[in-house]
Structures are given as structure tokens and as C-alpha cells.
Image: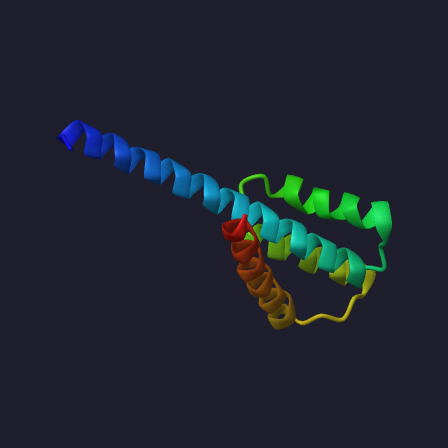
Length: 104
């Protein structure tokens, strides 16, 4: 394998890893959005719309932004969830998203 082939292979793997990371974080955000929607008393299409809002608001997935949105929405709706509970659910959703996407 030539140096150019190795470089191209490395670039392809890096691009694949970045795409997978983006998909995992987007899936995590959807799972967290659906969980938050349930806590907010939303069901069906309203719950799906809320999850899509979470994904859209944080187009470049960033855990801090997802957390802030959910914290703000929970506070406004007086939903009792500690910061730790929200972050813990985000961690669990990330592991679930990784498992789901790597299995597919």
C-alpha cells in the first residue's frame, strides 16, 4: 500500500467516524427529546415535534445546548428533574444510540 493509499484510507476512515459520531449524537438528541417530551406531558405527534425541535435547535450536536434547552423547558413547565437526572438520561441515551447505530 502506497503512502497516498494510506493517506486516502485514513481520510476515509476519519470522514466515516465523523459521520457516525454525528448520527449517534443526533439519535441521542432524539431519544432525549422524546424522554423530555414525555416528562412535559406531550404525546404522539406533539412528542415527535418536540424531539425534532431538540434536534433542530442543536443542529451541531452539543451536549451543553441539549441540556440547556431541556433544563429551560423543564423549568418553564415546572417539571421536577435535577440537573444530574437530565445529564444521566443524556448519557444513557448516548449509549443506547451508539448501540443502535453500530448494530445497524
